[in-house]
Image (cartoon, rainbow, N blue to C red):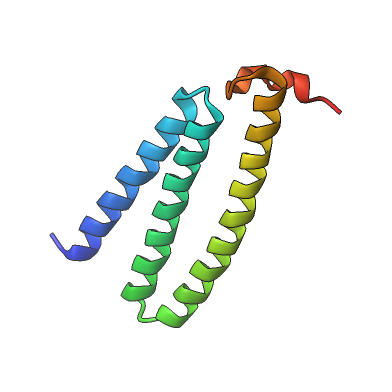
Length: 101
């Protein structure tokens, strides 16, 4: 078994752990953590594919772009968390219907 296939098994495991955390949890914080895990697995996949094809410069450029997008998504999620906590007093995703408008 090569190191490349081991990388992909680990990446697949991380994706499933992140998706499981996002699907099972009702907390906004846990959902953001699951999203971060999936995002880090996607970054590992890009780096692994870049190393396999000897195109690391493109992989690094994609990773930097992914980090910028990820920061914006997490900032929006945390803003949503703060607003939900101020209105309902909890981080439960089912209580977000009070955030209309």
